[in-house]
Image 1 (cartoon, protein in one colour):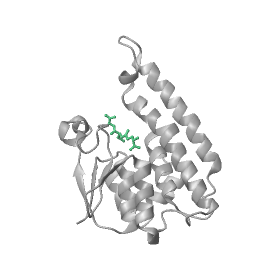
Image 2: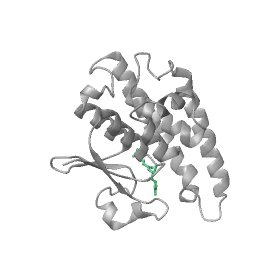
Image 3: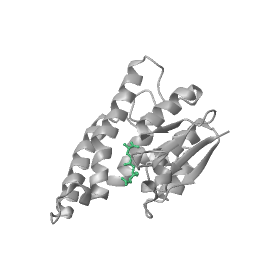
Length: 198
Ligand SMILES: N[C@@H](CCC(=O)N[C@@H](CS)C(=O)NCC(=O)O)C(=O)O
């Protein structure tokens, strides 16, 4: 039994695949094409009722986990030897939780508005203007992250799953930041980065 990752190239599945690769575990990928709107088909909604990727099927028992941040934290818990998070209970781990939660709650929802502005507009409203507002919010909210990056990684103590998230959001929205450049060359993650963003 292996993990099964449901996702598409260049999507939030990157973050999950990067964490799986970093943990050195076996996984299979089931492509759910965003271009073909496969995330909204009943077959996939049976996996994730919210009709979004990524989703991860766990080995042993086949439990499904959705929500990219929850998946990253789950992988960190299941594979502590991979060092995806600082030690449990440490101040550094609290900071990793803090910034992962910040990015999922403050930035990811803005990405949906950028990608699908018509979902948030009354009929006849200017979807392009809403998209630009959302882009501005992403830039503003990402600047908060840029200000706390210790360098080369977000946390002073070193690489963590939070860096995978920082790199993904910067690559999507702003053009890769210095941290993303470093992450894209990290040995286990480099091929995953290439596949998604190369
Ligand atoms: N809260 C979700 C958001 C996931 C999300 O928005 N995924 C995008 C792809 S990166 C998606 O599936 N978009 C398709 C849609 O909204 O129809 C998470 O963190 O996993």
